[in-house]
Every structure is written in structure tokens, then in C-alpha cells.
Length: 78
Image (tube, rainbow, N blue to C red):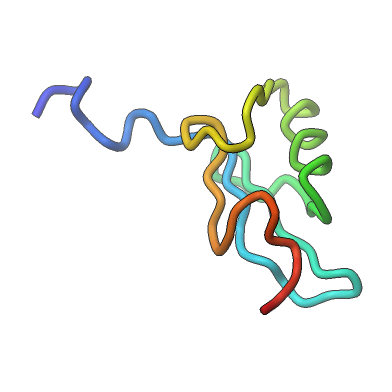
């Protein structure tokens, strides 16, 4: 397998982890493998990315953001 075929080279820099219990519920955000903050909604993810110097053009683009445990509209525990 060549480097261009490797599935691990194009991992997004931002990962939004599953919803955690809280009042209100929240999601932890990892940037470059480190927890960088707490998000209560999509806007918080964009703000954290911007603070890290990352521009997100499309929250649905898996090359930009990896959503774990639900997509960008998942902010409540089920």
C-alpha cells in the first residue's frame, strides 16, 4: 500500500466525542488528539477550531470533523 492509499493519513484534526451527561449535556472536542474544550452546540466546535487556527467550511465533511456517537445535531443523551 502506498502512502496515498493509507486510510490514516487523512484523519480530520477535529474529533467531537459522544454526548456526556451534564446540565446541559455537552461533548468534548479533541484537536490534534488532545482535548481542547467543551462544546454545547455546533457553534462551540467552530469557535474551538478557530482558536486553534483551523477553518471549518463544512461540519458534515468527514475530512474536517469526525463526529463520534452522533452527528452535528446530536447534543442530548438518548
